Length: 385
Image: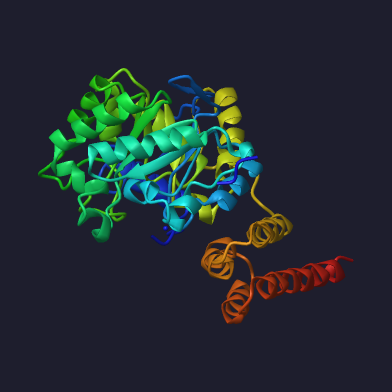
């Protein structure tokens, strides 16, 4: 067996639908009704790799390590998982422990894609070969990260101002590996430098197998509204699969994106740590949409499972135990990082978060979680006549 984020803003589905209605031309204040919806495709073919369902866990720095990826995969509904974005230079340095940890995965994570960033075509090609040799199913190029330290090195979205260099990377990596090669990028550097359609065409011309668009500019970062119309524009421009990313906060959003853009799959990033069940909920909602004929009523109770307090307890306990079992050196830090997302909406969650933040070791943090929920569940049992 081979071993090898931005804070998540939690917004309600209704707020999301209003924002997206405005983005799609629903008027200044958004549409007064939920948009027509189509189910997320059952599967997506990227080269010789079948992604089923057509849902992707976006690569997120500090989040999508092997523990979180397997955690999401075990909850169900996610077709493709991706590593944290990894420096191609780091991959080539034999002593770069961080890169090795980022590329650490287990066999039950397939299909899995490794995401690389860098600006040197040859370095990118050599790193891609290593990724292929490690057994990854796909390799992806990051052209979306807006972080200053990455952009300063001409990586991530910094390359969006240098299309000739991007073409050089496309050609070098494509020639270096046989596994499917994909790219994730943004609309452009800013509103005056929109390059996404041209970039997608270039990717197809260079033999890439799929493209994913985070429908914001680098200047936007993670603020404002994702402009799905650019996903639709890319879908109209190329014949390779197009994956949409940005402002999917609920199953309704995922199906609305498919209906409005025609995209072949959806990618979910910051919402996944806040609601790890979202992929499974999309599967459930898909079934309902098919049966409902592609329409939705705002008054209808969402036809997907909402986690109970016990579900949330089991989810937190499972993830924390997985961190401990993996013996990650930063397990306590990850537990504290994820506590703010995982305990959102839990009655008395502020007290739990404080006890977690005050704890030092990973087992102590897990103990605080278990004590908190067991006391709450005991009180609930006593309240039942």
